[in-house]
Length: 349
Image (cartoon, rainbow, N blue to C red; front, side):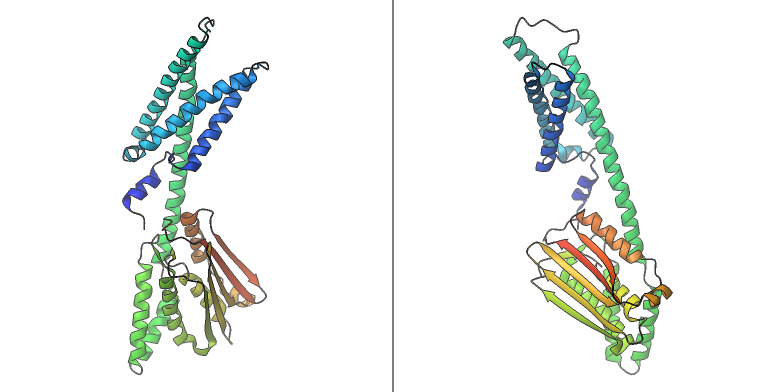
């Protein structure tokens, strides 16, 4: 689960230039700018000399600016966006000014008799840096605001999912409990324990990561309640391959899916059926496949709003970005859900 410092870091709009990927992007953008400025000079004879000069100057300014923003990131992210943006802007301009003065001194030392130009090169460099820095800082801010808006919308959906207890499941559980209290108090006590486990899971912070073993236990509590209602009409086949104990998944990842398998797959069929849950843990990925019988006609009569499924997809996208797979497909009288997640002991949130 993310701590406040990590959450503040995610809300900070300036990218983390301490990461190798960010540095590579800085180098690439700087070189593209150098090529663009070199082409704008229209000097075929000295093109490579001009390109080398621009590349050296722009790369140094860009990399030193990135290094300063990296070193000051911990301090800047504790400031307001306006203050952090203003300070970052001033830092980039100061670095450009110092680099421009040094470049001008070196050029005058190498070629002391070079004629002056109408535009002061130091002023020209500052103007270009001011425009580009303002553009990129604004772009970073808009991207951060967009990510925060998407995250807020997703979290609102996830909170609604957690607060949502299906009335039919609650009523069925209460009916099972009332029928067992008098004749089988031990089973009634187990149902209370099952419900308590499910309610505790639903009240967790939706971004919390739990062990896969714990998530499987929650599903088994749910299946136990439904087995008292459906009896022999429902069977559950668990197949677990590999060591799953070190790995974590988002809380309430599987339970809504197995609940859909019962409600839309097993319950409408008079003969019932089997739910198959295959979990494969490898060195790179966690592969989870849930299969249940499916009758298209019965499904049309019991059409749901897919809130649980869509919210699970949104939550995985929020936590893992693009590094996950979540597919659903209807085969011949069978419905299959597949989830593939990266195996990591770290909490992606």
